[in-house]
Image (cartoon, rainbow, N blue to C red; front, top):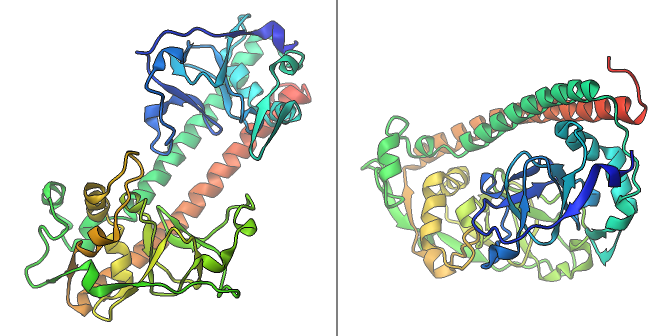
Length: 389
């Protein structure tokens, strides 16, 4: 069937009090509030936002070619920059959601999208109307959709497990030796609240000195980044933006130095490096005094206790990007246990993190297999028009 016979473009505005929705490449249409990684801010005047009702198809016109579209099961509003389509038939909306997000159709969206900005190509809606969509009978649509829903549920369970494993890597109680005192930790107002009496106290500025070492013309290693869950790691981005910049002004970070993204400390944007390389000039690198065991520092400053503290001392208008000034960071109180305890805590949490990484790899492999099987089912049945096995 041609696309135009299945959907018609629609634009209803004037519903500013409806729930704000968003379109994700991996999920389709979801509540914006359900994700913590969407930092796009809604406009102050929501009256121009478009109404979406269950069964409507929503496309992010600049990223449809990447798979950012979906049939909504929710009622709400989306950005004026999106396209909203009303269904014109009684076909199963779940089936249409899966088939229109299949790689076969995503490839077609890419072929009819145009633009000069990298990664932002506008979909040409007039060319979308002629796209052919394979439709089995309604019973078959429902059977296929029900099977794919089961796969999606398994994928969602794996993602929940993955999130739980990530959270486990920043166990405040383990860092502070207060495993059975969760209530006290939650009520703490200072990073030093509740620490053992025999531990010393210091301030960040006394034991952490900023390193000003720059790349020069000969980088000492690869480009590194700071991950919310892993700390300092290899930068695996492939957008090519870094290659076009002058890396001589990038900062050098070496093993056992602390690297920090001052805009994202309240999201765990720091960590002690085990690598030699260079980092963005927007980041800072710090030398750690011999009074501290580097692996203890890594887990301590990435713990929820400190993530919450950095939120309170950060400044900025964006709720998800609170810059911590060097002055405020220097005044941050830091517990100083005896070196033996620092080593015990740091080494033990390294063991826990390594175990969690192994579990994460298994979860990621299984999730990847399920996503692959889901795509293969759609391709084999819809594109090659095979019988349902």
